[in-house]
Image (cartoon, rainbow, N blue to C red; front, top):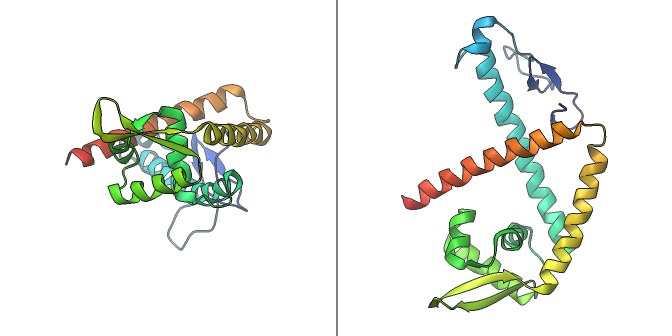
Length: 197
């Protein structure tokens, strides 16, 4: 399966581990040494290299994701902040949600979420209403306009993914989605642990 390497580099795939072939400092290996012991022993050389590669690729993905979120926010609405784009996506996927649930799911502090929600409401992308079960709480959901704009943008993004990954096997795309889902569930569980304190 194709790996996500640094821009301008060609990823090496050895023994199922994607290794970025960008230059390293002296003493760093640019490949994974496969040994029978390392491939089956947790903490062995291949196991360690796999986690090094994972950390590097996820870090690159996160850096690119932040930049892409800013661009997508601008396409959605010229006054939308990139940080609020993720909140809008969450509400469209999982809403309606209480403001407290949004705070817990995003792992952000209450004041940050409040600012983002206020911005989205002001732009007409999110509706805010009193919780029928608890008048002190608010329930947030994407507005009709917010859902319409976001759906258009997500359809265009899916079409772009289909184009970019057209030479991938469908099973590879499905495997990537499944593995990213597992990684996200792990992240959500960790955030919940931190929130519980």
